[in-house]
Length: 416
Image (cartoon, rainbow, N blue to C red; front, side, top):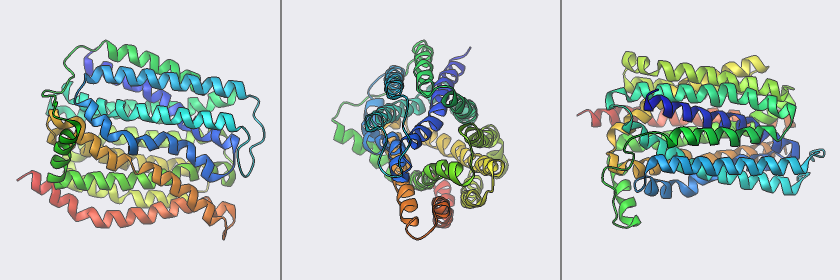
């Protein structure tokens, strides 16, 4: 097994755990409260570290062995999931979820704490992983390597993981988090055995302000990177707006069980895997500019279709189309970033980019809860639950129009 294959296998293990957690975080929170804003706070705790820790993660990534950083963060996430499983076990049996407040405040607080720790470790781990990949393959193979990596991640994160998570929740609630701790332990062993040089080529020691300023200057000097960062950030904001809405919408409007909901999310995985594997060929056929423009343009109709989907199958198809376009976009975006940024700056520039791209996720989650809560004051609850989909669709149409020409100009500038 090559180093890349081992790296992909380890990523698959951690993403299996993440996929199980995709269902577990929101579903277990919904067993403690029916308040959309309180349900949203659990994934907010998971995503908030991207806004708080992205910049420190970049500085650390350019200073240390990236392989060891990944191992340490996987260990931390495993311990956090183990603690969440224990807290959930001690709180059983759960009471009836109230319309306001939570039925088990101690467990709810433990879930928030575990989610924040998992999210914080993920910031460091993912930044290190994206900067480590170029050390495993030559530049001309980055699209293919990223496609293979993401297809494996999607297979486990969005196809197997949610279905397995739903099954485990139905079997015994703590199992969903307990399995995650085991998966991270196995991933640690695989990454720890990788041989090679995974420290930045020229680690700087000039003070964190100077180092961070160097990364910021590079990002500001490349118009394409700025455009892609802000575009990805708003897309992630819109995507997170539907995350909580779709949990409650699936339960209350469509009447789906945890198992049916997990299988619906699996539809997104199928589309994402197809996008990851076909991304390289689509780029060759259309070119990077048209590929990114049309994949972005597809997001608005996908969000709109989710609001109108009458059942599990149609909702699953919407997820498939959304993830297909999103991952084809990522094949171009991430590979372009990995080529443009020098290795010595890769951790810092990547972290600033991801601060913009991922730091807007918590805002999207909060907005989702607020939109539903405010919508309920003037609309029936069923109608209010789909308002985040409409808001995300409108926002996507606006962003697509604003950056359409910027994408073309940005690629033209780097190809001169």
